[in-house]
Length: 400
Image (tube, rainbow, N blue to C red):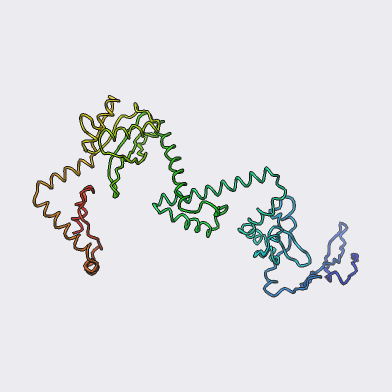
């Protein structure tokens, strides 16, 4: 006959939940069977003792899984989490110290015991700020100073990046503040907004960036065995004269052309242009012996055979060559050809008159757009032929 063994049953109290008996039969080595009775405690779905507030149905649906003490102990990822058994809620020990905290973990505690809920809270901006303010009590003074310096460095890099974006996109410096507002909306961490948030600061940042980029370009230029320069002089709308300088060299077996600078010049004479360019190269500490070629336009101040800029540079380096810019030469050839043809001059006059007619009247311009749309043509804006624009006649005539 099978033997029956009854396990010792614990005595129930009012503080423990009821149990459930389960039967299990196992076989011994001699072939007999033993029936075991085991009691399993069943957790009630009622609230824990000491909880005055009853959870709603939605809160009961949110409360999933159970609290895992391994999350905060030893190598736990959430050392800030505090679990209160009486209320069955999780609190953040840093966010609780923040006055008028809006975080669920800092105000009333969270009943969501999922790992993903804690991970989401750890990534919020409010938790990171609270952790920075109240979670560094064990730091030494040196560690605190170093941490503050690291945060200031990261913030400064953010400001320089915003200023570089403004300059790179050719935006006004007044857009610097709105760019910082956009970064703040995107919750960019460690963004310093107390200082350096006006257009003057942006201008200073751009100047520092320009100096650093120029220093790196000059280092690359010095590392090359030879280089050539391209210079041109022009006058802006305020009637100030400037001279622009480019440099070309070989880097990693590839030709590279870089912008070196834009200089103000007081006079457009050959002597003054040469002296200004020489001072510019000396300021950058460039080796003039490595300069093998110079490219300019066809102005007499640049290409004069006696005292032109190219002639003066050739006197210093006998192996230097000079090139008259092919784009300038093509434009000059076309201008000379137009001057010798009455038919071409009449075409220029007609194209300019048509462009002038539509540019001075908004009504005529609107009627032209209506006709272009009605006939299925591409909507174009008439343009005038400009002398300072290379080969602008082609695009102007094609529009007509």
